[in-house]
Image (cartoon, rainbow, N blue to C red; front, side, top):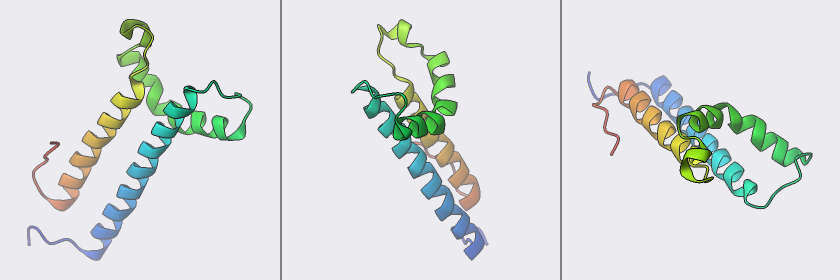
Length: 101
């Protein structure tokens, strides 16, 4: 029965795709907001910070901005990690070999 997925598995895959897409969108939005020096008391800025800092902080530790002449590459690293996790999770759920590229 390899290659066939049940309705529950397809539903789980759809939910995970939505979660991964929202997370990538939030990371991009948070990165864009930092370009305009936002008011840190703004509720939208606070929400973006709280919802993305848990994944961006470890990425900043891996590739600190001081090592890249002040440019923060943590959003790019975070999105690449999400794409990698997404490929592995969907590969396992669908029973297919994992292909990142």
